Image 1 (cartoon, helix red, strand yellow):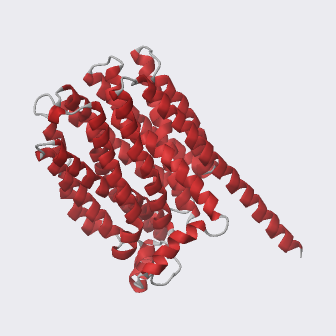
Image 2 (spheres, rainbow, N blue to C red; image 1 turned 90 degrees about the vertical axis):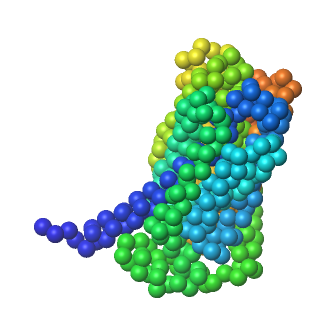
Image 3 (cartoon, one colour; image 1 turned 180 degrees about the vertical axis):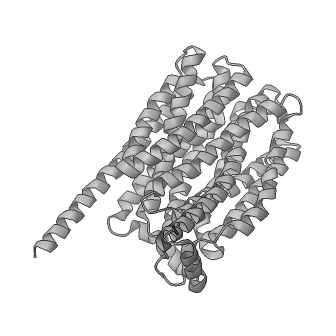
Length: 443
């Protein structure tokens, strides 16, 4: 018995979604590897005084990459609107791969810092673009879990970075770890050949025939035409985030993202070093990185399903509260097994809490404004990402490493408050809209 046309079309649509998510997943895997590799090799750099590196300088270097990510995230939406999301992803992968090569050959801290800054630009531009891309092709009602699946790649990259450091630093040296981060350059041509372009971009550029053919072939809903965007239109998309009552909601998301990324990148940069300060050997400290990122993968899958059912902002607020508790407990001396459990649970909640902010913004946005909304939410959060590594370095340099966990825990409470208020406002606005519709219907 042959399958019905609708079932066949649905299967094609599912295959397309898997293709897009799969390619974006690999790109984000390499993003995570490049991002986490610095934190994984940092204890070795400090122990061997490579480049004469001190704790406060190490914090500055961590902030260079996140500053580059700030630039990349803030410009991603605008550049994607001009050249397309597919091309931007290829450019970003190429950029952070080549920049890692610069770090591998660096002879002084200045060149190394330049390499990390350039890598950050590519890393920052890739993530919001990949999120927007998979949102375009996500099955109806499955956007949050699709984004969650995508973000597991970032933590898989973190796990890979820890193993790269464990396997290569002692026998070969820290530079070999950065040479591994150049290998994604081989993936860029694959991405260019196999990844389909964003449907909303094709429609916005007037390439409606191409978009319609792709949508029909794979049973994907074609976005409504929004017209070709000029520079003024792209600026208007940003201004639109502040029109009416949206300005407060936008700021709430930005403040929550600031705290979330301060936590994510502060902990990612300093977790192995802070654990070494607690008395653990380097191999054990890197094992904590693996466990933390395994928790991140589990958290993405759990949070994605929970967010599709209960709402992404509610899950994000709860997850940030649990993150604050977990991070605070990391500063309490416990046996290694219990510490491992706390690290795992902190990874579960911390990483997915931030991702659910992105999911909330992506779901609430229209297709033509999604890249701008997600890019600027990520970009504003990057100020926190810049501040987190710097803060950890300053606390360690002052001999107050134990306060690092407390400071990060307070940041978790900060994000919980802002995303929690955003959730309450969304619920209130939804109730008001329902009341207005009922009132209109009664007349």
